[in-house]
Amino acid sequence: MREGSVQELTGEQISQLSRSLMKTLNLNDVREFVHIATGDPLDGYWANTANPLVVVLRELLVRLEEDGQTVAFLKTVYAKRPRRQDIRDLIASLAPEAAVDELRNSFDFVVQDSAHRGTQPAAETLAPGLQRNIKPNLNMLDLRLWATGMAATGRQVCRVDIAGSPAGTGFLVGPTAVLTNWHVIEEAVRLGKQASISCRFGYAKLPGGGFDAGEEIALADGGLLHHRPYAPAEVSGTPDQPPPLASELDFALLLLATPVGKARGWLSLPARDEVLPEKSPLIIVQHPLGGPIKLAIDTEAVLPTPGAPERPRLRYATNTDAGSSGSPCFTMDWQLVALHHYGDPIWAAPRFNQGIPAGLIRADIIAAGHGGAIEAGG
Image (cartoon, rainbow, N blue to C red; front, side, top):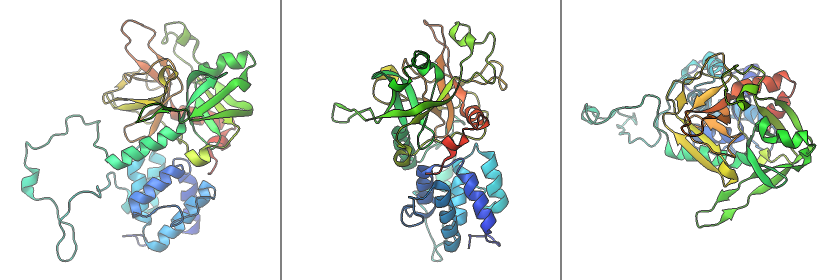
């Protein structure tokens, strides 16, 4: 039975929860969250991960119910998905005690009495003057969890090549689906050279020197599944005049010949875009100048966006370079928020970089009838 609850989840509620969680969690997310919540591995212990993701989630929830650990898992999902209000509302309705914004750090030093009740830190350790939260938008991060997220993301980001030469960056959003910018591949498609496009995963600099060349994956036949153009003003040097239309999202959804996402995992496009406060931090994972994978972190990144919130763009100060087009932009806890696509045309003293909100892209893909490519279980 779930801790502190008075009613078990019904079979219908488990199915509803499984389908909903599949929209925001991939297999690597589930592995991480289960380990946080229970201390046990997902694979083999809680579920058969060879099954489709929705089946894994359903099996997991049934087992968690049997073991009385459903609330611990849902608490983790609730805390780790602060911008998925739809998921949070569902969790709160099914298990109100799981609606907790912050997880207790399992590595905190806690003194226990003879009844094994955890005590709070002594008052003197909380005396004023010892610590201050200077930047309210910059949260402290669990080191191991952050590193796990970074490692997973590194497996899912790729360099987009055309005829063997680097053209941009992309990332997995489904078992065979890669998202990048339309402008990265536009010329190749226009010239009928779509077959020359490939995605190279794992191209990285090695700690001891040298490089890991990674794994090159070709596109499937008909590999361009869907795309939207960029705004004409964004190639004129005056990107705000006129402003981009809601359909001008500058993305391309590619299909790979091999379902590498089943091994590497993929990034979930959010169901909605939350407004990020000004000066919120951002991480961009990218292949700048066609080189090995890198990340850029800006702890005060988000800038005012002209015409916000209606304007379908996000502006930030995080650094990028040629070859970074098509990179994923994340919050500090590895929540995908945007597809990087553009930099200030002012060369001497650039003021901003710019991305497409990821929720808008997801909605467009689904409206076009291609939701199966990004929501497929794995």
